[in-house]
Amino acid sequence: MKYAIIIPDGCADHPDDFTDGQTALHVAEMPNIDTLAHRGIVGQSYNVPPELSPGSDVATLSLLGYDPRVNYTGRAPLEAIAQGIPLGENDWAVRCNLVTIVGDVMQSFTAGHISSDEAAELLNTTGREIAKIADGKVEFFPGVSYRNLMLYRGCDANDIPFDQATRTSAPHDYTDKNTESALPQGCGSELLIRLMRESERLFAGHPVNRRRVESGKPPATQCWLWGLGKRPNLVPFAGRFPGVCGAMISAVDLLVGIAKLIGWDRIDVPGITGYVDTDYAAKGRYAADALDRYDLVCVHVEAPDEASHEGNFEKKVKSMQDIDAMVVPPIVEKLQSFGDWRILISPDHPTQIFTKTHSHGPVPWVVAGSDVPMFDLGDYNELSAAQGSHCFKCGWKLMNWFLGKNEA
Image (cartoon, rainbow, N blue to C red; front, side):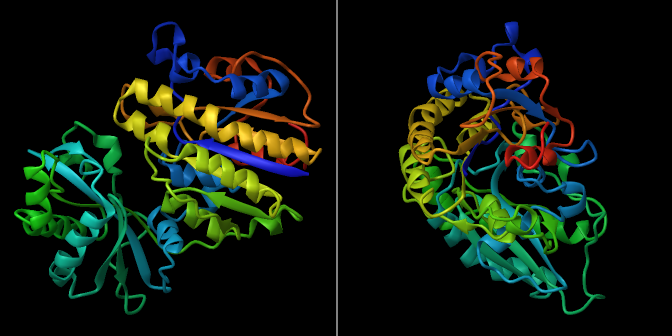
């Protein structure tokens, strides 16, 4: 049996937000995904427990079959693992967004999608000065665009300023909002806030920002620190689902980190960006080719989530149409060549156009394949999924069913 998973990140919405429930999934022309829906099963799952924040870290763990209430320790350590950054027993990883804040309002949680080279220049020239506040125990690691990391290296168990009660806020939840209430709280929060304020001072007037302003782009006004945690330990995917060897395609370090932790390989694809300008066709081609070598190939596409955070309905619709036209067909064609196959298409969490944020609630999925019965509830969207009988209140149980280990 060959398996494929496609994750159109954040593509789901709340139908009640729209006139006649016309979400992006209703409006988008998706003939290939809709064909799978008519020939297979459309259902829904709740990937984020109510007590946890609805981020891709929690939701993706759930989607891939891991109970986040047991396995989740924070977002940043997952990204550190993706970058090959070793985490010691007393180390804490912290996500470091480069953002644009004006008058305490989050104008851009991506600093206008700052380039990776610009982000690296900013952090490489200011990181050591910022680190002095923590006696040199913090270190910055440039990543992709606005997505970067900071590590706090604790000398021993008594040299750790944070704990599991330390609370931080995702900057993408505060687009166009005042950020005062979003500042870190709890143990170690004073240190995080001081580091953020120092970055604000050092970024002001930095050559990178001067060039960006001169070219009409928003400056990166500061670091935003959030998503901290220690290294998690996950049971390998092949240990939980014997005989299934997996691989991940994603431009986002978070997904790559989760893949590494569960023992999957990363498939590098040129031209993928983690934004709406990604090379969708390349993702489809590389995934199809990888099915010759792996039992399961997972393709993550960040574009619908980014469009949602911008509140851009048209971009969200287009991203789904591009996924349908360029990612899905080569994968399905290759799967069918093996005879026995299954495909799952599902977002991790909803990302609401009107609030520009992630949210709790169900996500719609479609499962089709050589041995999947046809229920034909209609096209792939939130309302069709809600009408079906296949619903996983604990989203992490969907994977077991998808792989044919039990029935829903």
